[in-house]
Length: 249
Image (cartoon, rainbow, N blue to C red; front, top):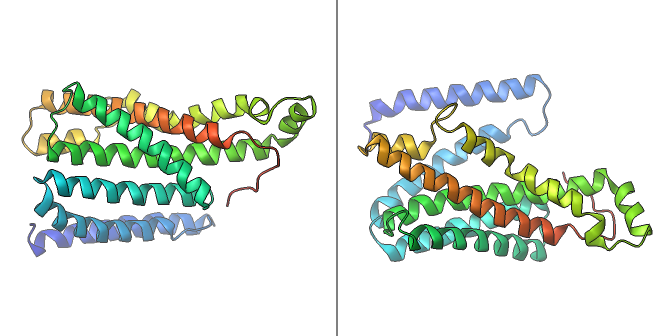
């Protein structure tokens, strides 16, 4: 564990960065300007707690499994809130994420792309769950906003006899692609523009750059696979709409 003197510069730096971000948003009149600051403070507390917990469970498959289930539950709840809370939405998001994450991790470990151990399961599982959450959120919001923005077109198709699914099919396809854009760009620019945290962390942990690169490639492919499955399931379920949905806040 770092000494207190080592933590002070870190704390000062984080607080200054958070203050700058909040000040810029406030100066431009952005709504919810305190959101990033509160997110940082929450992240600090959560990381402090999880660091202590993981130190005791990192070698136990049972407890790593429990940790992944907790992560998944929180991720599904967070994504559901972003697209409008309801039990139907909760079931949809959880099912879509579960399908994407389980298929992806099953392939990763069954093929031996990554060793099946508690340590690796926690590492790649947490990354894939987190990205599936973000993609589920984007997919859900994208299709809802697209239908609201193009309601006249959707209504026109319905009036011509198209089914609710047919009337929103093109919007749904674009919503899926738009939800994947951040992950696609991250994958395309890895090594050129960005050095992913998993890659850098592995190197700092003493792993060779080649081994770290191999792990990162599997992570990126896993994110894309889980994200594609999640986005398609979420969008396909939300797209068939007969009545104009409410705009998301």
